[in-house]
Length: 91
Picture: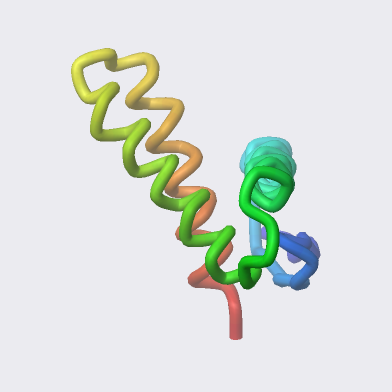
C-alpha cells in the first residue's frame, strides 16, 4: 500500500491504495472533479457540498438504472468503491 494525495472539488484527501488501484482511483477522482465542474456550470451559486451531493446522486442513479447491465454495474460499483475508499481514508 502507498499513500497518494487526491483533490476532490478543491479539497485534499490522502488515500491509501495498492499499485493496482492507483490508476482507477486517479481516474475516478478526475471523473468526479469533471462532474462537479459540470454541475457548477449548470447550477451556479451553490455550495461545493451541494455539487458533491449532486454528483453522488448522479452515480447512485446510474447504478440504480443500470442494475441489469452487469458491465455497467461493475463500472459503477468500482467508482462507488473508489469514492468510499477515499472517504474512509480521510482522517
